[in-house]
Image (cartoon, rainbow, N blue to C red):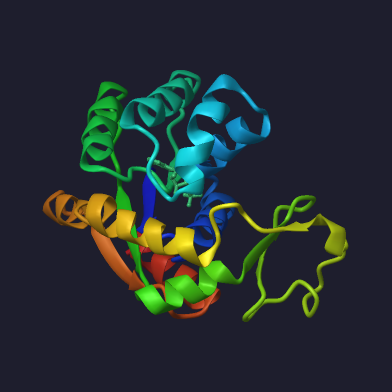
Length: 213
Ligand code: AMP
């Protein structure tokens, strides 16, 4: 089974794809995580994309397709993916379709997490994560100080692209380049829109029942 978790930045894609990966034994592919790894490793690719990401722009389709192709090559026909933050352009979606077909695979579900712009800006501007346990927190509604987080404050960090200015840019990029994919997946007949404003467990419950229907 292959699933796409779709939505604007800050819609909750990472959280829901982690839950799907764990509960349905899927491999999570977050292109954002893969790109940040390149930046942290200071690889040639990392140096090339750092600026673009920190300005809230998209990395080129060619770079993204190469990343995905490398993962597919290593799969040994075991395709059980949850894609988080990919595809983000029509070209990426079309190429994903073609590549999956080559392996006799398809996308089974696309879950579109719907969250309004004001909520997105609020969520992302408060977002922080722990560099030790990788958990994501939020200063506005899920503070690491009031939760059971034990790693210590020194590990808490903000993503370089999680500032208000960059989030506004990322949201615009989403509307212009990524939101048109909603029509693409409606036509492909596998899009399910779920409100991203409910609680994490409620959203996951809705997604789970759609999968099991
Ligand atoms: P994310 O962690 O998914 O919010 O991604 C962080 C940033 O990485 C995005 O704002 C883009 O600059 C870049 N990025 C991640 N995935 C893609 C993709 N599929 N296509 C183009 N750029 C991407």
